[in-house]
Length: 319
Length: 275
Image (cartoon, each protein chain N blue to C red):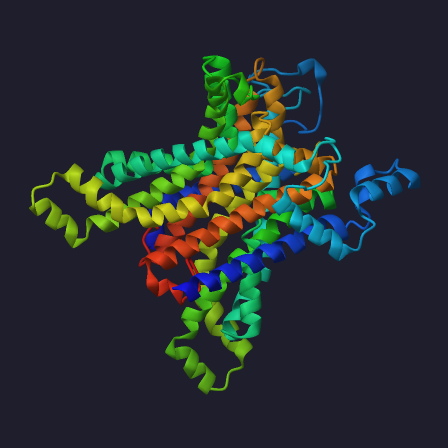
């Protein structure tokens, strides 16, 4: 058990370090002189030298890498070139939009996906089932940013229930902020919900064929009680795994959706920093995104090992 | 098998949609109602009419013509991006399978695992900023992410096939490793690769639409569905139809390939029911 966790932790740490090395090389070593890249064509040798000194680029590569890594612990990730404020503070500020957005989207996706998937399974091969599965197919095909645009047309411009974009800030009022996040979260949740609905339906159908369902019905539980207490619980393992594994799709989704709704979150920040060649900010932002995906996947892997001892010796989940 | 396929509803529907899109894309190469890049400011933002079936955009360009040309671009992205993934990925995956457990196998699979940690759209944005925006670079950026997908599937499927008796028989008969892979393994994993290819095709079209929406995919004046959606947001109040048609085109195209993939999975491998 401890050996398993230790092995997984070593893999996790080495993956994180390799990821950091790759990101560091792409943003600091490959472009040649990052200062020249950031300043663009109109830069003079003097301004480039000044920026090099400001960014600490004169230090050896190894020192710069270690400085960056310790920055994640101390919270000093340098000064954003485009915004002229500390990167760590910038990221913390933007997380206040992206994190609630991602949580709301996961919540919507799970509620919709699990309820509708279970409903479809309990009425398998009926008209309701076919309609729900057709809707799920549509949900997979509709690009979430188009769905967002359509919802703006109907619910923001047409009915005026929600703002068409922008974010008032949590200080300006929690209700208004949640309202601003509602449509984007819903748009993000659409493909996720569709995937979860299909998976839940399959998992529930499988669980419905088990012996314990007959036992539960035999001891007098209604069909609904059996579904909630026994079937859903057994069907939830693959569904929760999928929810975690889809995390990577969710956070890339936020990059596009935040641009649709002009939300000042991490996704918009990364898009703007990449466009503005703000390599200082890009480097740490990408690391945070990639690190989050690696951590979530490792978490799923370890949780599985804890639940099912057979997986402790294999190559992990989904391989 | 063809008989069974033609009675499978999602296969038939998926095939019809993809053939329709393909037909439109081919037609666009020789004929569109108007020149999709011709601007006529006097005819800007005209709602759908008998002349411009789907209306005109903010520069007076014909939306239907742009959509048709967009279909060509979308299919181009799918074909090349999936082609890159298939050719390199399958070669890597089969190579890993022949040397299962070796350092090479371990290295290929570790690199595949590793690339999955990099969210595709995020990395594509980075690649496109360094290489410069554009259709070709977008295809490259999307294609790269198809490589590990196909490598993993090809490895897994090849290992299953290689455990069969007829592979041992071929080895005993003195066939070379390459000969076995080419004559016996590849034909037996083609089905699963085709199914995955149609799913990846749909994902590639979605990814290109997203990148073009962000303005770093296909560049104007070359029309793209994603770009058209981005432009439409400026003219919401005057011309809502501009936001409807390009999105519907993306959704229809993706739906077609997804249904085709679902159908093919059932037809080619009746044992594995829908996941």
